Image 1 (cartoon, helix red, strand yellow):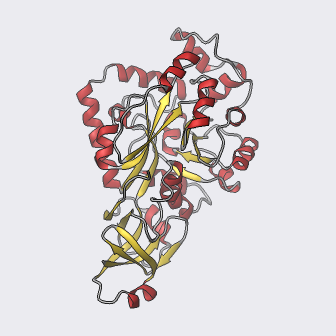
Image 2 (cartoon, helix red, strand yellow; image 1 turned 135 degrees about the horizontal axis):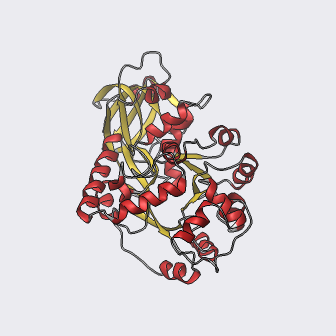
Image 3 (cartoon, helix red, strand yellow; image 1 turned 90 degrees about the horizontal axis):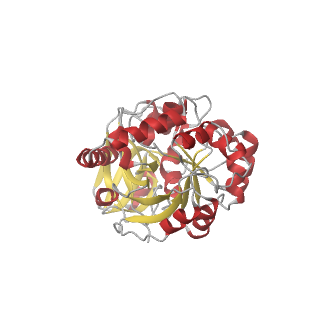
Length: 395
């Protein structure tokens, strides 16, 4: 047993404690509270005083680790379809050993940032063995297939993954996965994750069957005669397919319109934001103020190094913090408890609370009179150090 005392604690739910303390048994938290209350009850326990702010281990709710070798090899700022074409071209020439080395380096970086768990979105599961040795999280195994039978056959696969990770099937997107496959996943998968309302070509394709994504399919000779065009916006179509619900993490929403977000909010779904990726591909932010105004639960991800410079969720929090009137405390919560909820680990990760092992991350420095959440986001070069490891994934 030991006592850890800090200039401030960020609990992970948007609240903070100045001069906070934790009583820990190994990596497990026993008590959380103001130092003035906990220290008299600590008896003869050893006390360590840390200068800085403590918070739960970070959760990166949306990664594509298998794309880590594509850093600097894709087209920025030209829109989704040019980025997609450049990404696919870069993957063709990638060597297996280069991909494995890039994945290993990306996982090292995640650990160095203080990330304890991820929502890993994957096609081929190539990053999963290495991921399971270092981090917790959920593997969202994507299903592509505009052809119904191809998609349903893919659902029959039952891969083996490390015990540190949860596993869930996930449709890639409404424009790339047959609706019957999407419905099947929606009925059986929990937690649920999917790219949604990410870019204008998605909206054009679902509403009219045309636009840049349709032209992309035609250039590649992809048959799409049997793929139904719903004639609906992405969010309305997602709702019709049963995707919008409290355990559903819908990723990006950078093309979402305000009236559509009313429906999204009513369903209680989670918005996973990857603002630096959106800026890289489309030079646009997600509608953060509209999301906040509706009380939509938020999580943060980084997407991949094919569309981002790092996998640090605090850097994506900082990108939104630089927007006017976006509370730092809300963004810290999105990078901790919000992410834990989005990947189905809300019971064990993301908050400093008794009986859990969420990991304890220290951001070092002189807090002074600063707000603790703003202190964490204002200078991302401050040293970070894990003082306790995160526990095992939920069963």
